[in-house]
Amino acid sequence: NAGVTQTPKFRILKIGQSMTLQCAQDMNHNYMYWYRQDPGMGLKLIYYSVGAGITDKGEVPNGYNVSRSTTEDFPLRLELAAPSQTSVYFCASSSRGGRLDEQFFGPGTRLTVL
Amino acid sequence: AQSVTQLDSHVSVSEGTPVLLRCNYSSSYSPSLFWYVQHPNKGLQLLLKYTSAATLVKGINGFEAEFKKSETSFHLTKPSAHMSDAAEYFCVVSEGNYGQNFVFGPGTRLSVLP
Image (cartoon, rainbow over all chains, first blue to last red; front, side, top):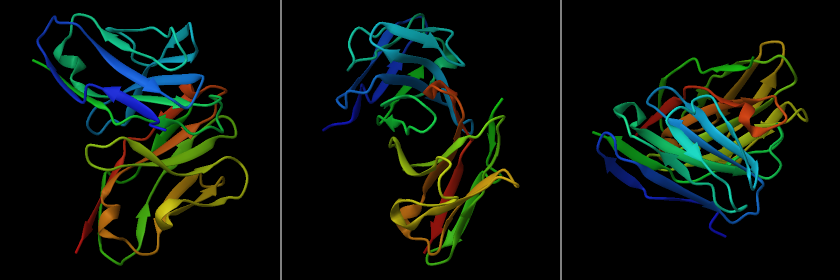
């Protein structure tokens, strides 16, 4: 049981490039989330999904897109990368998504945009 | 709206001495509260959670936290710090039906001195 996995671990992009951050979970969780972590700021929610085919915006969605074609996978797409998107990105999942449920986190992707 | 304040951005203790990491929250409803730990360059791991059962919650690695509604606090303690406790700690409040209402505090970095 690998839990939540993310690839790549590190990436450097040039301004204007695009990329997809991959996230997968093998716990059969319905709910999945993408966060970004900036220094001293805690984690901010980018997008979330309550099941395959259903996604919605979080607090900071601008510049990102997501899709959820399967229960296991929840990729995050960056279009036209900007320096403001330099951050550490975490994917997470939870079973039922309610306030009683903990979220399980992946190891993160460190992205630098130059 | 819910929010979390972690009163100290950095706490430094000596090995073998007690640890106190402070967290205050704001919530309109009966929240759930979580503490997560993040070791350097790692993902977040759940330490413990409060979900309206016992107000004193015991977690992993000897940590515990007490929910005090009158003080809107959920401070994290450990009787004796170990070098391996050096990490970033996040307090999280959740009051919604879905995980998109996970709100993170800014984090407290714990240093443990030999």
